[in-house]
Image (cartoon, rainbow, N blue to C red; front, side, top):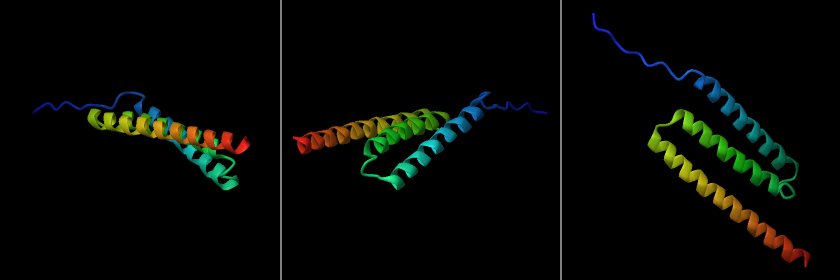
Amino acid sequence: MAAEIIEFPERGSEDRLVASAARLEAVVREVERVAADDPKAGLDALLAAMERMGHQLVDLACLLLDEETKAQAQIAFISLAEKIAETRDAFDRLGKRGST
């Protein structure tokens, strides 16, 4: 009779996965609410929610993906964060021009 080694998942990782998915779902609901209320006035709130969504997606990636794919996901979300910052800066400049 051959012995087979069975690897069990890290204890608590399922709880972390459920919690991370729940946080992501909350961000999505917030985006839907802000977009439905007044997307033009809520631009800053939408950008902030996009940043939080990116963080949650990286958190989920760390729980679900292999090391190489995790690194690719982190690079993609760093790029997303940079684009969000550029968008904020552009809207800030437009707002300052419009108020002068």
